[in-house]
Length: 121
Image (cartoon, rainbow, N blue to C red; front, side, top):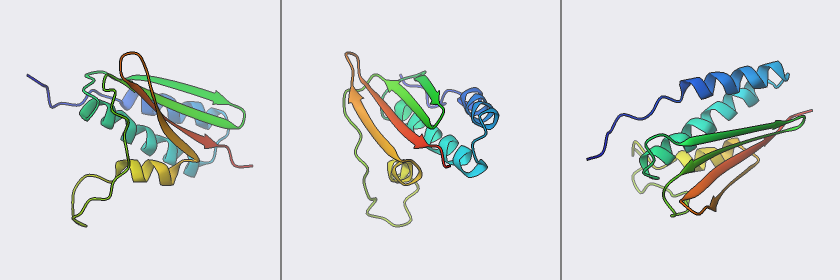
């Protein structure tokens, strides 16, 4: 049996926002990071069959990297929904549009999906 209640990622979103604010990142970049994180986190839960995805955040002076781990070895591919009114199917396109780099790497037990944002000067 599978639970259909996603795990709460609000704590990570709050911490991510706080971290980027304290580092002086622009509000628009913070919003992009939060939305991209939300998309890959929900995908890890929903498609990666991971009840509580692990999240890794790395912040350097000019680079943010966020990674989410799940239990599914299938690497994600952005797709276009055939129905322009579909309620899902655009998440990875959104991540690709919001971030500077995006990808997935296989692991021993599944995969890690990540994105990077460069800090604007």
